[in-house]
Length: 229
Image 1 (tube, helix red, strand yellow):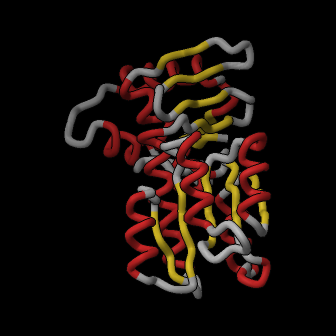
Image 2 (tube, rainbow, N blue to C red):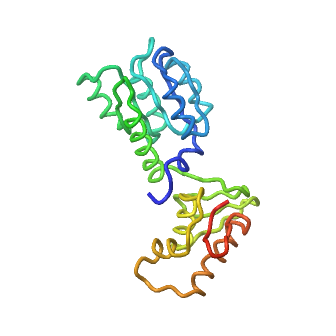
């Protein structure tokens, strides 16, 4: 993906359903880094109530929950939202659980004790799923919103500006590297590879993109490069 995992997930809400004794600070730290909001509950019953009015974008749940277990919770959620990405955590990996999880078409099944790399991998798969099946947006500093799936910009007057192929590729490159300045050479190598590009065509692309996303969002450091601010 040409955009970063954190940028994709940072606009989303996750419903995290876990027995209180299972939750580690490591898990919460990771989820806080990647998600806009964590809705934390300790029972399937509470999760179903919150699901109906919080409308989370992602579900992460333990199987071993009091009363109603995580499998039954996910079955209920799937009835109203067949596409929402689900990550399931479990203290054991019995075949019975695995078969049920496969039928639920979850993003991943992670066995506790949870390893950081396994959770990061599952979140990466979640981001890919959201790009392909969801409606992922990134809010720019001026309030304009970029929609990854539709490849358009919505400004503060709710006007839609459709981006051309090179415009959205350039914007996604800037988003993925928003914490650093990208040189002109790197941009050319990424967008045009071995093709020749004139100076006027390069400047024209930036001018058109700036018009659509807002001039204040793209900083040009003379002789160094460009950065999304």
